[in-house]
Amino acid sequence: MPRMPQAHASIGVVGGSGLYTLLGDDAEQVIVDTPWGEPSEAVSVGELGGQTVAFLPRHGRDHRVPPHRINYRANLWALRSLGVERVLAPCAVGSLRAALAPGGVVVCDQLVNLTRGRADTFFDGPDVAHLSAPDPYCAELRPAAAAALRAAGMPTHDAGTVMVVDGPRFATRAESRLYAQWGGDVVNMTQYPEVMLARELGMCYVALAVVTDYDAGLASAPEVPAVTQEEVFTVFTRALDALRQALHRLVERIPRQRGCVCAQVPQAINH
View 1 (cartoon, rainbow, N blue to C red):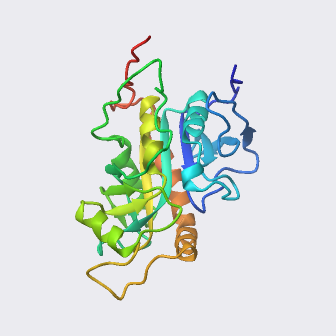
View 2: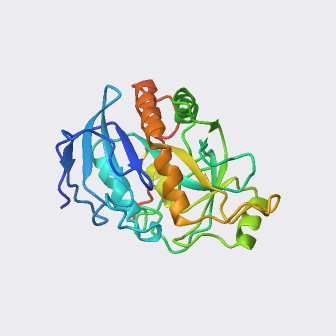
């Protein structure tokens, strides 16, 4: 049987590329056993914004886990087993629109999944359930996140569609143009299945998508260079102080009681 942790937190933060620590040195390190294997890292539990928060870096503390190898099910299960009901998820994204400049943040409201073969549900059978997910991101957390980001001085976009690709490579120019034609605003490698798994477990989820680059360049601005790994980490690192301030403010703003529909989980058909 999986080992149940003693620590408890109602808010979880999943750290993206460059955000590997968030809480103080006195945070408790909790190792969680899950039915789905090992999470990316031990979960840190400590105080942020006057509340107890669980923090988990999705790539591990030393960025050893690439996006297509992350054990998303173990990560989300570990947070839920600690009592987490709301997940705040900073991540790095590439822009597909000239108006979404590097350094800004998009509070995503929609996604398109272009990944293949990822374990993306807790209902693998024989118990079967079908998640209703027309609006995958929490309608209560999104405006609170946008307000917290603006208060921290970060250029903020209240909505946007993220195109989720497998990685670890970046897009070709043709792919980038296609994603934009399909209605994408930004591109990312980790939002799927993370947000859907959170919703299967009845957790609210909000993405704080830090724009680090212009993907493979913009068709409307050919002089814009294609993204490099170094650029992504440089821009994300530059935004870390403001992002930490935003997370602190967001945790302070989150109401104790949920007023959204995210807790409505699908009912399994038992066999």
